[in-house]
Structure formats: C-alpha cells, structure tokens
Length: 238
Image (cartoon, rainbow, N blue to C red; front, side):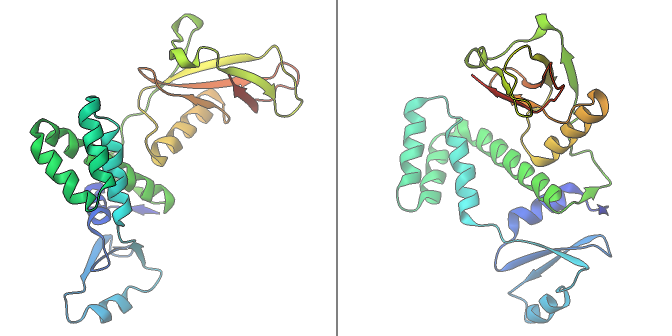
C-alpha cells in the first residue's frame, strides 16, 4: 500500500497515540484521523473508523518509553552517572526520577532528545514495514550503500576475529568455505533498513543468505559458500 502522508505525521501519531487519543490512517483520503475521548461524539467517530478503510495506530505503552530510557542509559559513558540513572529507573516513579536526573545534567539534555527521536524514528519505520506501507516521499530513509570488500579491506572487531563459517547446513561439510565480506554504510536499526539491505544484496550481488557483524566502525555483512554443494546456507560461529 502506498501513501502520500508525510513520515513525520505518522511518527508523531505513533508517539502520541494513547487510550484517550486515538489515531487512524485514512487510506481512502490519505490522511491521519485523530479522535479524542474528550469529545462528546467520540464514540460515534470511533464506530465510523471500524472498517477496512482505516488502519488503527495502537496506543503507546509506558513500557515502550521505559525501554527508550533504558537504552539511553546504556549509552552514557560516565560509569558513575550511568549507575545513578540505572538506580533511578529501578526505584518507584522511574519516569519522574529520570526527568529529574536529566535536569540535573543539562549536558545530557540534547543527547537525550536526539536518542529519543532516533528511537521513535525506528519505531515508526518498523510500523510501516509491519503494516506493509510504502510512503511516496522517501526522504526520511537513509541512503543505503553496500560495498564488497577486498581481503585487505576487511577490518573485523577484535571480538569477531575468530568468527566464521563452521558447517554447511545442507551437506554438513566443514571445510574449504569461501567467504565474501560487505560493508554497510548505515546500522541496521529497523526493519525498513533491513528490508532494503536484503533487496540490494539480492539484486546487486545475488545473495539471499548473509550474516551481520556489528561493533566496528561500520556494520559488516558476510556470505559464505560451501565448496561441495554450493549452498550459501552456512552456520557461522566462533
């Protein structure tokens, strides 16, 4: 399904959707419908959108915002400060505790807003993918580039130096594998990026089965082939 609705409008609706504030995608009229339970006629309006012309944006749950706060804490480099945030989230009223700590550390304010916006962007992109929705304006999507690396260009993170093909999942061969390495210019942070990566790997390199190695400067994709049966369904391990 293709829609003309701007990505930011969908992202805002996903962020603000709740049990009091209802958001729907009007497929026919290509717009977002908002219904507030404060309105006297909200029940009638909700009945009107109970058909296949509308897609409901589910209410945002507190645990989703809590997960965003947790992931932000993992990015704090100052160990003692990160511990304070972690302890704040473990106590009663974690949302208020988190906000107070952000206010006490103004140097983190901009980082927090950027992190939250990135996480909401990924949520919205996942939502589009799950609902099989394509937007006409794709400016929100990062430009994905995949480059095949030559042997001397492959730079794996230290913890992945011994990672590689172990056995063919079709013929159980365990030796002589040929591995190709590819560099992905953006992290695979959401399902839309993963879907586009799959398309490029298939169309440009004829590869459907590949692995991911993260932790370095850029994400590395790997594809191994069995020398006996030519299968690319290879089990990789350390």
